[in-house]
Amino acid sequence: MSVSELVFSIRAVNRSSNTFARVKADAQTTTQQIKNMGLAIAGIASSGLALVHIANSFGLIDDQTTKTASSILMLISVMGLFMNTSLGIAAAQKVYAAACAIATAVQNALNISYATFLALTGVGIAVIAAAAVAMYAFSQSMNTATASVQNFNNATAQTTTNARNIQRSGDLTIYRQGIEDSP
Image 1: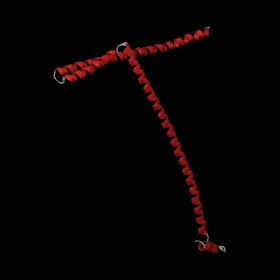
Image 2: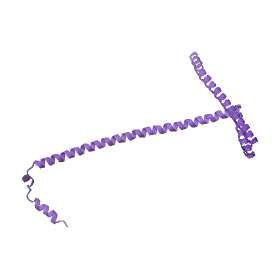
Image 3: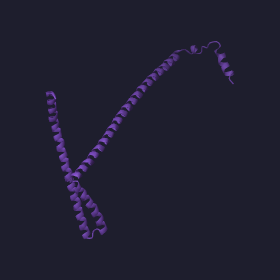
Image 4: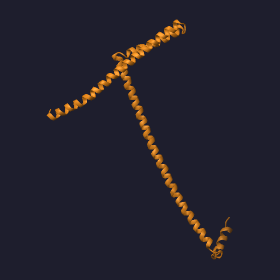
């Protein structure tokens, strides 16, 4: 190993040490939070168990309800105490990691759908703009046609009636042949 490689590896270790220390601190904080949550769950379940037995003593609930509620609350209490063990913490961290993976997948799906929405919105705006341009071109051609008809009408209005009644010789015969020869 050369001196430059050695210096590079020392720098890499020094820079990564801070990151590893931060990850370790985060893991310890998460572990403590899981233990605290487990203790809280066990405490709440134990309190509920005591309340159920007190309610049964005063006759507020019957024996069957007391047995069912006691079983459920004991199970919750055991789960809370299990979360204080290292195995329970590992399981809780696995569940947390799975929940984070699911949340990431959902977020990615939402990002994809939002990008699709933006793309389709852009296409929609482009279609609307193209339709507006086509309508403008059509209206311009209609304006030109209207102006042409108006010019023809003006020219016709200025022509004398004698000039309008001029017919070429044979036109009337051709016109009559078209009418008289039709079945």
